[in-house]
Length: 287
Image (cartoon, rainbow, N blue to C red; front, side, top):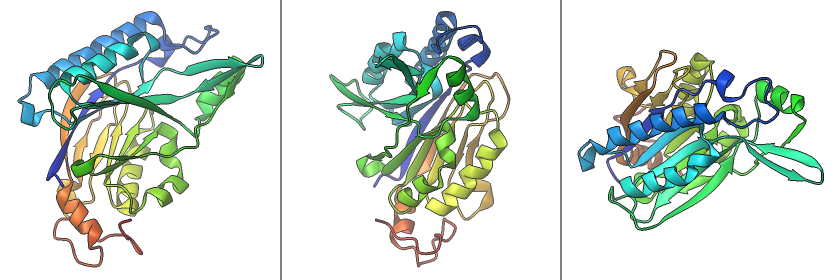
């Protein structure tokens, strides 16, 4: 296991009132707003590129609704060029079948062939995962435009080798208790992509889920609301919040380091008092 895993956060500032106008018949990001957010993403990648190779992130997180359809291929090229995994939220995915319009909330995962080496990769692979629980605001918008919501019931665990195992979810799925029953004992890190204005609830959830699942939790929220956070179940309180960003309408990038090796040791020996971490939850067992 690696000692630490560097995670890059690019907190884009998508404005939902511009991206999806109330008078728009389709829930697709406005072209000008999509271009503005893409420029933020390019700036974020440039910021990471200026770092020494050993300090660059192995994985870059983008908030929910960061990638419109026109820029997905370019995002893949940025991932290939920097040699880092990218996990980012997409614009709504709309399909038609049998005279009905179906809508999904999805995210993309791009994995360069040479990963985890931060060098340019000749090839990448990619896949998508989706949201299971939609917010009330989403459901209202779907109903107004006569969309049929399509949930994604699948739960993914990414095996990142020496960087640990990773759970991934989108925004409202952070409230899915059953998900954490499955993840308990199976992951080292949990990544949440969000577009959420109730930022303090997510702070509390990050701390609670980190303790219950006994893992690192990173929430990459929209910079439009702020509220991104990286939490680890360290014993000392001043170490637990590895990163917290507050302040609305602020574009920012940040690299945070998550513990891997010492957390894995604590997970493997939950009945022993870990020097660095809080006690594992009752009946915890690494699977």
